[in-house]
View 1 (cartoon, each protein chain N blue to C red):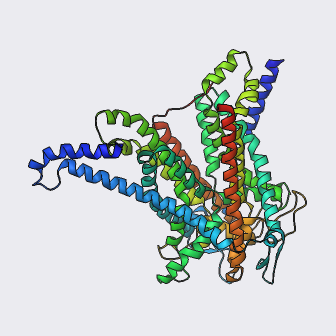
View 2 (view 1 turned 90 degrees about the vertical axis):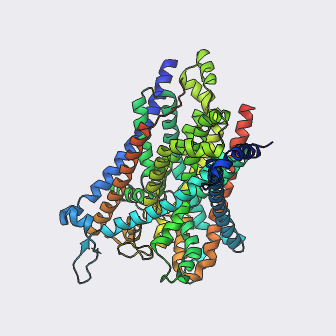
View 3 (view 1 turned 90 degrees about the horizontal axis):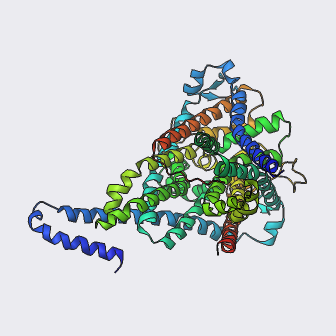
Length: 311
Length: 295
């Protein structure tokens, strides 16, 4: 018998012995319990349904409206038309976005993973660990638009880099650093303590253990953290708004040039109004498709690594 | 030799870690440095509580008061938080307590997709689907505080559901075996044990989500109408984040306008630090089960 049925039968069985005296005063306590329990289940099922529905609706709506726009030309040509972007494609925005998030992942990945390693394996003082976690949480709390301001004042103006992919990527990297760090920390904490103990017992130094065991064991999770961080960076507009993304440019040739980016391009297309709505749906389609593909790839790779290591 | 290598490795890690920590101070320093010159020209009081924002001299006097923007930021994010809280507590309960494990993992990852969707796309969907509804209901142009907070609440859902369902699941694993042995039904356990015990983590999830909501730029900017008015539910308003995003491009570097935008960003930053320290305080009072690994 399933748990649900057993529960209901159990409540009913007791209730019958109570109703005789309690029936006259409205709901008996146990019937009330049953009623509230049902209400709770109904409420929670409804809200879960609403949440799942909103995900599926959002994705299917964008994919449905955008799929008719996608063509080889749309993916390989530069934006064109009297009002820019009404015709043509989004190729420079795709390369620009890839560059932006690639830079961000490179800049953020190493310090994030190092911080997670230190916090999990080497930090002995409880106080220090708590305060570092607080700092990382504070960084994750910095609004993305403020990161844009920071990068503008520091990189674009003080260091004189100008508006370029590097400045924008650096702003994005601060945004995704806590994201990667938290996921990496979670991955490291999944490591069984026995494995670490065995390694120590064999006389391996901590650095050796990390290199030969911890990193390979967690590689799947780490790669997927980096990939998802890259996706996160690819979708963000606010940090690159005035640090590196521009309305129109050719394919960037170096990191010191400004570039187009998918989210900014989408925003501008929407702001232009009805004429560029078609290409806006196409751009949104590309963004969602990249996101879903990255998620799938990350999950598949993590599972593949897990099977290799944990049988 | 090996000892040296080991020391070097740990030293490298520490260096990178301190880089991360300094990053925060660095961001704060630069925002503050650019924000301070604002107050050479106007008082802190008139900046925080002034209602006129007139960055360019159009005949009248210039004025930099961000009171309406602060109010709008608070209004939009609190409304969004209320909607999101209603849905996410129920959904997290369903996920963590009432569903089988395989289904739970699957639905968790489905909802997690929401978290990755860029905010421009939320704004886009909002403009395409939500504002027409408001226009039909009689709101001019359809952009208003309510529209923005509705879309924002969907953006908050995945974060709240993830953190809530994890803490609910931990509590269930701790209490339900005992409760079941005494013949107490699951829904009664949830109501009388799990929910009250989770109050602290619910509070943390709410505050975290509030921080996210306050910093959200693009989606809110596209839906809130962007007019310097005191926020009303069906009226237009402008949040701090959208103020910065809209005007930074046109502010002359070094002008009071430019510095005032940095000051507005600094105010936002301070709010968020306040939020994070509150969370730190609450968390330190909760009984924590900290996991550790030793090398």
